[in-house]
Length: 406
Length: 136
Image 1 (cartoon, chains in turn cyan, blue):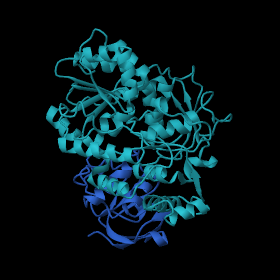
Image 2 (image 1 turned 30 degrees about the horizontal axis):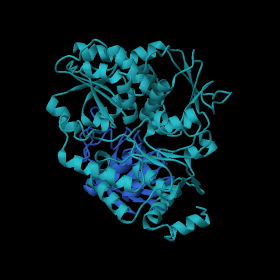
Image 3 (image 1 turned 45 degrees about the vertical axis):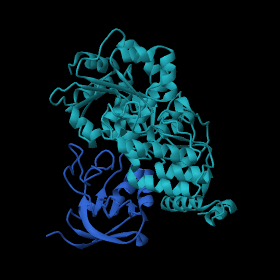
Image 4 (image 1 turned 90 degrees about the vertical axis):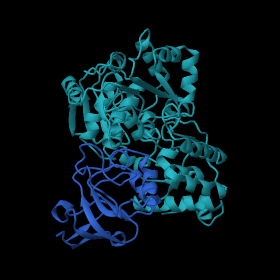
């Protein structure tokens, strides 16, 4: 790779050992992908919590901070695995909570803003057209590329951290024009009136085109989608298809005027088949989750309408996750009180699928099914051996309050 | 028979092949304490990837995979190498960080050349995978 004098200086240790090692690592990743150079980034969003990092990752961070590692650009954190106010009641390990607190403290010493959110694009930072960033999780990346027209690859925890320390990332993938072109067209014939429907579209399109560089172009939709709808669409495309970008005719800034020749159609019947095909197992309806991604303010508002004057059925657990900023506003606006009065548990700064101790939690509660309106979380929780079922938002609320799964 | 790969990272390794018809994510599919594929319905459900050379056609989702490779390496339950038909940056970032050899692209398709249980050598420098011994 072609290196600037500044990059050569970093490699020579001019900005300390942590930055040197970070750039060396980025160089290996860049070489793999055939990157010709690095691009400066303005913003980094990284995943780092004890559940994903494990003891090995924690030890790595301890070493980083010993070497005075410090962010070169503004850096935020993704959702983490514990809400300390709830971790005892959720049956999470006290020992792991100590480590989680240590990770947060270390990241703050490195000048990371621990926002603990997977919806940074809705609540923290909105990069502009053409702006290079280094983000993860996948839902944040696909939103940045598609809706903002910013440029990021999927940056895993160690890669995002390296970008934070060096202020740059190898130029490959979605940093380059050639990978940002639509590769197939998707005609949206369905009504798509619920967030779960948008996730289901992501499932249908993602599963049939599993490829990081597949870029669908959605078109012919009858109205303008909302940010929350595009969020569920993108999160599901990234999850089922490993995709990092989509276009939406008339909506996203880089949508092409001429559609690619490969075409698919998503119609109402396709969506109904998605819902119909989930197996209900033993009919267990005791776990309903609104998470993955965290809820926006308007999702919180909608849930509060749906749960008003209702009660989560005794024996059923209903969990909503969001970030601290949205929770504060939800409290101020009364949405949180309605949800909590209905018996909903609101967790702050976490995502359900990365909760520490989730498999033992499932066993202890004898949960077999997990019901959600998020196609993403329905997909990604498999290794914890949940049978998962996607349902529309109001249906999820109905299941939580009736204990009956249909 | 040999397989040529398009991109590669890491040291030369040898080991037993596990060939999957289904894609992989260390978060969605793997139990990160035993090294067993545990996702219900995965075509390799119940199979261990510990010390194996793993052939997967695709990579699935997941930023968290980046830390997961380092984690399983530390726990000594990592594969010896990942051989992907098509992969994504997270898998590469994770494997490079953990020092686990990884390759992308294959010619010919391993289906025609290598079966689970065969003993294979991965040579990232030469971008080559060789089948050294057939499974009994």
